[in-house]
Amino acid sequence: MSVSRQRGDPIVMTPTLHEFWKGFGEFPPYYFVRMEEVVFWEVIKKLLSGKDRVVIVGSPGVGKSCFLMLIAFYLACIERKKVLVIRLLKQRKRVNAVVFFDGRGSYARLSDLSFQDIKAIRGQAQGATVLVDGFNQAEVEDPDKNYMPFDVLATSCQFDAKEDDNSRIVVLPAWRDADLLQYAKLTNWGIVRKIKRQNTPFAKLVKEQYFYSGESLHEFCKEQSLLVERVARYCLSVDNQQAFELVYKYGGDKARAKWIVCGVTISLTAA
Image 1 (cartoon, one colour):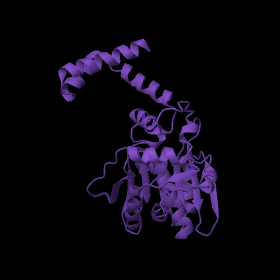
Image 2 (tube, helix red, strand yellow; image 1 turned 120 degrees about the horizontal axis):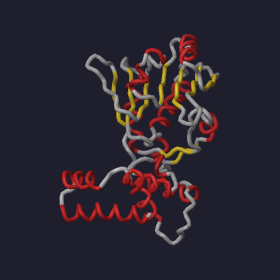
Image 3 (cartoon, one colour; image 1 turned 180 degrees about the horizontal axis):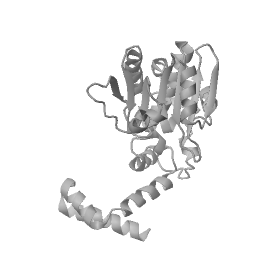
């Protein structure tokens, strides 16, 4: 990662990883290395050599799953360690993906396994570093599901570490608008999103998208119409009284508050 940033090109082509994880949780064909991730990686490497388990948290779509897959390949291919990856699959009628690296160049990929199957595989993969991706704390700590023990967990949900819990919680930072702008310029972001406003400054297009996507790369790469529809649905689920209460309590200026609420209501009704 640091080498990529040092040579001034934050984009790393990852066709092998993209092909390997296809159908098993996915991985993009290229990876944008942020400076935050370079620092984050140095922290993670030190924690991996320790005795405590590591929990990577952060907002949805910031890249936790991808980062965990990079850790898996680093441990298996560079450190030559046995690695067991258990990933949550979000596609319809899919359950999970389980991938085992033996640290000597061989691997096995399975999917949609039962909890008993996972238990059996864990028994065969004794001594492996276990990476768990996408499950919440309740799922991971459910003894019937056999996700425990783990060495590294990546989750978008809050993880409540008890006083006697030997977990080191680290937060993967969200994407800054400047990084998203650079990402858009260096990739086919505009083509994938079918942008037709060729005369609109690129920075303005990115700013508009950022308004709806927030600091999530995953959301940033979606078509804007889908994001707008989702925001509209969320707004429609809040009635006027709730909106006034929220704005009066947290929004400050009452005159502006009334304008905001009425503005949202009118625009949604017109749509």
